[in-house]
Each structure stands twice: as C-alpha cells, then as structure tokens.
Image (cartoon, rainbow, N blue to C red; front, side, top):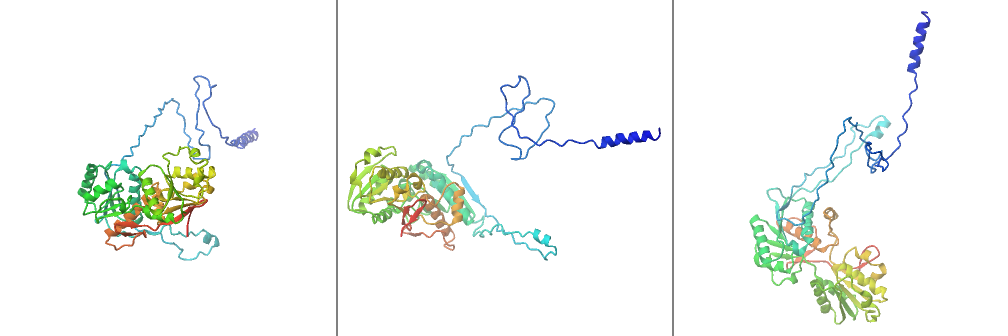
Length: 443
C-alpha cells in the first residue's frame, strides 16, 4: 500500500503537467458593420473598415460591464475669412548657425563585426549664413495692398517678401497695410499708418491709380511698385522704383518673328488694349483685329472659311485660356498662320496642357523671368505660389532684394541680376517656344 500510493500520486502529477496546450489560431481580419438582420435590442460591435491589423497599431480596451453612452460631437463649420488685416504679419529671428560634425572612432576596433556596426554621423545640414543684422536693427518693411483691386496678389506679394527675407536669414519686421481699395482717402490712411509705424521701406503692388496717389504723398520713403512699368504712371518721384514688365520691349522683340501681314486678338481688358497699341507701334500694317471677350465664343463661326488668316502673324493679346482656344481652333479649322505671338501674359506651363503640340508649333512667347536661386524658389513653393512663371511675384522678390541692399548701404551683393536704371527694373527679355514638355529658349 505504501508502494502504490506514491506511485499513483506521481502518475496524477505527471499527467497534469504534460497536458498539451492548444496554440492560438491565426488572426483572421474581419470588419463589423451594422446589419439589417441584427436582432432588435442586441449589442452590435462596429469597427471602421479604414484600418486593418498591421496598418497601424491596434489598441485593445476592455469593455466595462456597465453600458456607457458616448456623444458624437459634430465639428463646427469653419468659415474662412480671406480679408487681410492691417497688422504685423511676421517677425523673424534667424536660427543660430549650427552644424553636425562627423564623428569617427578614436581607435579601430579589433573585432571585424564591431567594425561593421560602427556608425559615422553624416553632416545633416549646412550652417545657415550669419545674420547681418540683429533684433535691434531689424529691417522694417511695410506692404501696402489694396486687396479688392489686386485680389490674389494681395497675399502672394506678401508671401514673396517673407520668402526672400527668410531665404536671406535677416531679422525683419513686416507689416501689411490693407487699404481695401485705391480711393485717395484709403491710400492716404494706409500711408499715414505706415509713417506712424516708422517703416523704412514700402512695397506696394498697386495699379496706376494707386501709384499716382502714392507719388503725390510719399517723398521721403523708398517705395517699390512691382506691378507697373515706369511708363504707366503720369508723374513720379525719385524715391519710387518700378518693377513692371516692359511690354513695349516684348512686342518689339516679337515683331522680329512677324511678317508683313499682322493680326491681333484681344479680350477687351485694359492690358490687351495696351498691347494692341504696342503692336501697331511696332508693325507697319495690322489688317485684322478681333475681340474675344469670352472663352465661350463661337470660334467655328469666327474661323471657318476665313482664309485671310493663312500665312498671317497673329498676336494673342488675351488671357491664357482664350489664347489656348484660339491656337487650337485655328488648326481645327484648317488655318495655318505664319506665327503665333504672345507676351509674358501667356508664359505659363498650363499652356502646354491646354493645347496640343501641333497647335503651338509656330508660337513664340516673350519672357522676362530669369532663374532665381533654387532655395528661394523652394521657400516660395512652401507658401503655395511660384516665382518661376508668375512675373508679379518675381518682381516683388526683386524689390525685396533691392530694398535690403539699400538697408545695408550696398555692402551686400544682390541675389538677382536685374539692374535698375531710371527708377525702373531692367529685364533681360528672351523669346521662348513652347515645346512638348517645356519652354525652349530661342537663340
């Protein structure tokens, strides 16, 4: 008995310890949705089908025994107000110049495997240029914008100035003064606020009306107007610099590609009227003039059977969409012009997608925008606009570049090559042809 009792106990212990445990079944992804066949009153588990196991970290929680109800809050409707307030927009402090040095081991490890695991830290970023000024000598620039008049450029012009100042790593105080419109009392109020703020310089993307008011009221502060050419303003002062495109020069260059039979298309805008005037100035004979006020015009009726346009040099003095439709419809109606000519207005990459290559085979476009520093282009892109094709933003950048050089009394080199003569930015204009995927500069 004494022998069998320990043996039985040992057998029971051995049997309990060697019980085979079942391995868990592999997880099968599943989604849970409310079913129309679910029993009324039954608790239904619902999960989002947006994420499956493995796409993100799954968090499991224990469901409490007591039923708790959670209210789902509807997010409030956000109404975006795009009106620019006259307030300090940005004040930047340059980042200290720091860099990461290369780290090398003090002695070579004896073990080969240890040598393979040794990490060398690369240089992560080049040091930023040392600021030429400090917070006690900040560059104070005021941007005067009549938002109702210049619309989108009220924002992009400001961003162009900020982009340049960040690119140069300057301490700056930038303030936006939104006059709303270009009535004399509105401009005068903005200028009074600028003077009270003690700003060194003014950048004002305005029309000719606003420029004339500024010229009559500002004589002791340097003003840069990126939107106008000097010839567009009746009278001005020596303290006002203009950065507008010289359309007269562009039309004169395009005239070199034209023959004796010249026609024009315009859209009724003041700019197209101005461009038509330059065409007549630079060409002896204009036999055809057509106004196309809308892209929805009946081009078939306009061009079908109009053989007089064959072998003619046609100026597209319209906006991009209309110009693209004209170029396409000419070929669709079997009209073959000698050349299609356009100014800076249609220097836009969308032209390459709005037309077929054959539509623009004989097209020439004048362009005054040159290559800007790549880092500056990237910063502008971060703000959602470009200085590669938009000449107003490009001109504004030139203005910021010039004003900063004046602030440092000419001791710094400029980032843009365009010179200034007679209070006007002088552009290096060239003719381009829209190729299959890019604009190709002519010889």
